[in-house]
Amino acid sequence: MSAFLKTLGAALLVLAWLPGQALAAGGGGDPVMDLIYQVGNFLLLLGVIFFVARKPVMAYFASRREQIMGDLDQAAAVLAAAEARQAEIQSKLGELEAQLAEIQEQSRQRAEEESQRILAKAREAAERIQSDALEASAQELLRAQQELRAEAAGLAVELATEILEQQVGDSDRQRLLDEFITRVEPRSDNH
Picture 1 (tube, rainbow, N blue to C red):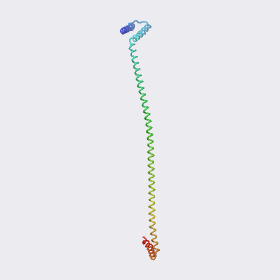
Picture 2 (picture 1 turned 120 degrees about the vertical axis):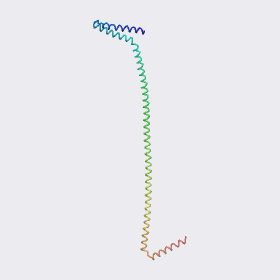
Picture 3 (picture 1 turned 135 degrees about the vertical axis):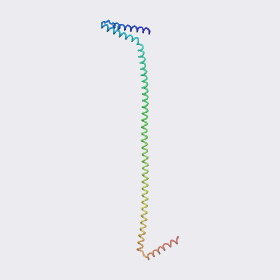
Picture 4 (picture 1 turned 90 degrees about the vertical axis):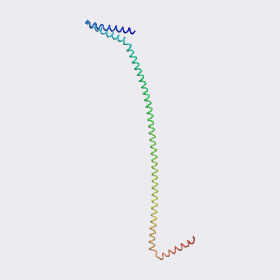
């Protein structure tokens, strides 16, 4: 069948070529007839091209269609994989956001606990300092009172000594000494 098509194609080409040669030979004819020959030649050329190139063109378009369909299938598979990957990434992003919120909450709680612990230590330190200050001031007051008493006693003794020296004469001294001895001797005999 292929040989027949080749022979038929060659015959049609010769038929399409002959009228153009006749016109070129100078037969000056009718312009309407020239137009009819040209249209006939064009249609004959299209018919030859259709018979000769139909199968390869149809095969080309069929293979091209199959290639495009394969490309579309492959693109659909790639799109599905990309959508699955995006869903996976979105899921991981959601998990990360939840973890971040949990970490932030834990950090806030730890900071609050640390703040409470520091405040408790500060209160303890303040109470200890206040207690130490009160104790130190009480001791200082007691020491000052003892110093004042000692100084007052010393002043009282000095004052009493001065008064006694001024008011007590030799006869009073002798009499006080005798009274002291009489009081002390009976006690030393009892013991």
